[in-house]
Amino acid sequence: MRTFKKISLVIQIIFYMVAGVNHFYNPPSYYRIIPHYLPYPILLNILAGCFELLFGGMLIFPKTRTVAACGVILMLIAFLPVHISMIGDAPFKLGSLTVTPLIAWVRLVVLQPLLILWAWWYVKRD
Image (cartoon, rainbow, N blue to C red; front, side, top):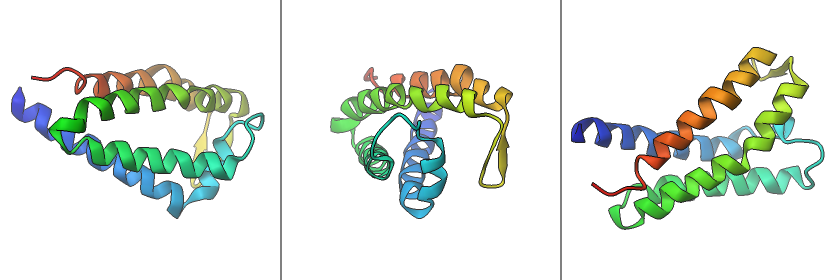
């Protein structure tokens, strides 16, 4: 189980680092999903990218891993309005992907809880 958890951690670190970089590489795709009622979408996108990079980097080190995992959980909770808004906006194009209502619902009720649980796995120390 330890080996699986370490491999899972590496995947999670890469996932958040790549996601964080993507906020700067492809910002229009994020502007599209930020709810219209939230002000300053450019700033929100930059902050989301910075926090994903920060928490991804902090997951690397055992001393900061618990704080990073809690940060990831809080960040994912903060992203819930985006996923709820996506349900109402669907169907829409996000790059080459068409986000259907089903995809939006799966992101909200399956993917987000799984990502939160995945981060929670690193809150507790072995």
